Image 1 (cartoon, rainbow, N blue to C red):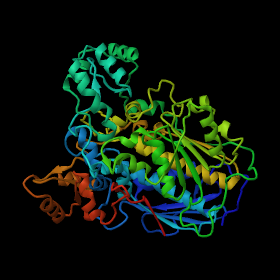
Image 2: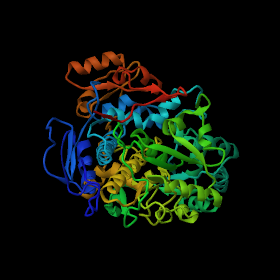
Image 3: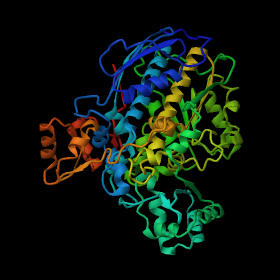
Image 4: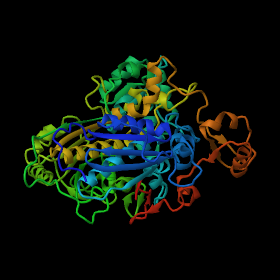
Amino acid sequence: MASPATTQTVRPLDALGFGTSGPPQITDLVTAHLRLLGARSDGLADDDRPGRVTLRGGGFEPGRATTGWASHGSGLVDEATVQAATGMMAVHGRRDGAPRGLAADYAATATAVLTVQGLLAGLVGQARGVEPTHVTVGADRAGLLAVSQYLAAAGADEGEAAELAPGGPPFTSAEGVLFELETLDPGAWAAFWGALEAPADAIRAGWRPFQFRYATACAPFPRALHAVTRSHPLPRIRRAALASGAEVCVLRTLAERALEADGAAPWSLRPLADGLLAGSPRRPAGPTARRPLAGLTVLEAGRRIQAPLAAHLLGLLGAEVIRIEPPGGDPLRGMPPACSGTSARWLALNRGKKAVEIDIKSESDRRRLREMAAEADVFLHNWAPGKAAELGLDAEDLAPANPSLVYAYTSGWADRLRDAPMGTDFMVQARTGVGEAVRPEGEPPAPSLMTLLDVLGGLHGGEAVLAGLLLRERTGRGVRVDSSLLGAADTLTGPALRRAARGESPRRPAGFRRPLPTADGWIAPADESAVAAAAYDLRDLSTTDALARLGAHGLTATAVTTDLADLHHDPRFAGSIGRDAHGAPAVPDPWSYA
């Protein structure tokens, strides 16, 4: 059992050692994050079988994890097969009208972060009296978590509010410069296009698919809008954005991002108070607790995906999560499609949470929120930069009444870039070279319309909170933790940025992770089988026969999930996907504890 406080601890894993074995796409990132959190590498895991991670020392019983491509025998053996089976290729490919693999190792990245989360949660649980456990994390479950909102929508009671058809940004200027456009305001949208003399009917028809592209992963707006931007030079496009209140961001290359990258960790932790006051909410879990965060309270004032997903993960680990919603409730509860009258997408991130309506514009309600924070363990939000300080709800405002609070802010940029545009998923993708990283050589860069960074940013947010909770348990001091979409982008593109820094091509070769068509669908070869598999013409074979032909030649492949609703009956995920009390599809927890 860990000692209740280690006053010399500066980072959560100081004085702990670790060992790893397993797929390097996963364990290399696990190693990097454990080192950033203070642990030192001291050899192999206790169990030298593939996919093992062990944390030991610091007064804790060893923390053990198993991590790999699949949590059960599903035939998923690498990044490509996991992307194909979980529906990631289908969602990412909606913009293009056919499944496409992400050239970046997204499933492996998410799995690594979830593995570190599982280990951190286990140590937090130990410090609070929960028996040590062994955590298992599979990339198959990480992939299902990444598409959980799209899966929920596919199983809803009604259809999508916007058309699922090919199309979307980025746009191209007259000089051939690719850029992203962002605004959350229909008035700014109309003013931007009006300044560029776009047809009025195209402006009206384009807003809805643009507005819903976060939810649908495609944006089939009129081609006339693309034609309009191609007729104007970039300076005029910038002036139209400035005058309208919209924002544009030119797509940066990975080489450009590598030159400016500061090497910062994807999150930061800063102690808030000098000591633990009597009567604070820091408390043990209790002798019957099964989940490591049982008995802890998280206040979440989150919007969209990033902060709500981080809080959702903390809830899955046993915390009580209380959402702070505006008067009348979160408007996204009504976002179509619905299950039993509630947005299926909203349920994917918020099921099981309690809700309290708070008007943050009201001083009396802000006072009420401060009182709630005084009794909480975590306060988590993703408000606009400076908003918390303006409201008197920043870390320094809440710490005096609760010096053991873990105050968590999930932002777009973490104040790391001076010229940063609006901190939304697609703008951060554009600014950081993700548009190149997810597409192989020979294809124009294009940020994915799957919300890659919102999801990975939410995973980073949960990881940062768990690190803060562990640091609190070891020092008795409250902690401020900051994470960002920028940090998520740098994590995802890390291998490509390192290639660029070495003077190598940062992008994957032409044709990388392209599914192969069959007579009735698509198959995705494993990465190591892809070159050989591409030599076969499988278009006249059924998917079943195509897989058999490749298998007869020693090549590994799997069927590509093209309709996420089919995942309920997919034998590769037998029994994994259920339905919640509203009837909405629910993916399994990303970790299994034993």
